[in-house]
Image 1 (cartoon, protein in one colour):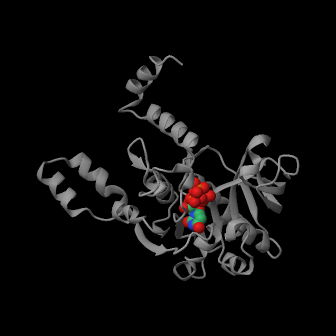
Image 2 (spheres, protein in one colour):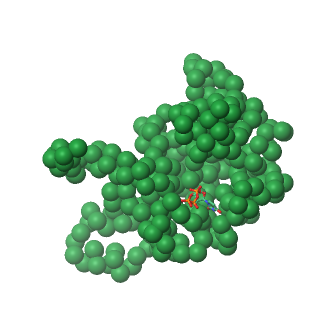
Image 3 (tube, protein in one colour):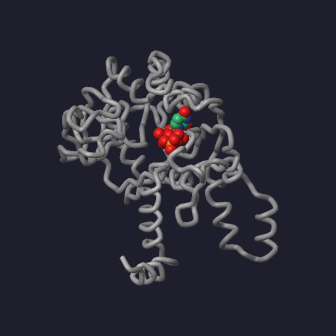
Length: 294
Ligand code: UTP
């Protein structure tokens, strides 16, 4: 039996330049999709996948994330006094369900560097990594889908999705061969190679890596081995490529829809679609959208 995945690392120390000026003084992870901060969707996905130990890598100006998952005594006291039980539950719900700790990445030196910060806290165990600005809407949580593959193969698993050729150069892309799993041959792949941000003509496939990973602790050594790439950043994809020399790594084409909520258009798409799905808002919002001269 492979070791159980008990911890999830949330790198959230990026600068969020695509969302300036909103991200000048607040983290992009705290931008609300309807009424919940982006990062809460990821934390809820981890909880629904059976992981309660959350490690958030933060940077300067990210204290709102810590406050969000902390107890807000004044607010809770006020809601209690006013008998607002529903709201009290909304405010308490998630923070009651997780053990959360925070680590600082002093400089935004890349995703690989951010993950390496968690080495001591993760220890010698497998762990999940969630990039919260990839928000995923699915029946089975994406992380849970990856964990199921991890439990079968006891090897690192990355979430991938098909992207059109014209946008492939924004992603890390896998060169991979299909593997039969659970009666299908088009979801699971064994990775042969990975390329960060390839050109449309040179991309080895249309399968792009998105922000969900189940990793094994060897990744930390690989991160320390790789040289900083573009912009002095240490890339997680480079470390995974390094690990691939000694270890099988799988890619799983998850079921669900992913929104890049760290990008303005992706954020707007997620906002509209999540609002339309809400019991309390959906009908009124749909009626409103119909009145727009589109
Ligand atoms: P992004 O590529 O989205 O970069 O990072 P970013 O800086 O957050 O945003 P833009 O591109 O400037 O708008 C992917 C993930 O890696 C984390 C980010 O917080 C995000 O979750 N990250 C990135 C770090 O934690 N540290 C880093 O040094 C870089």
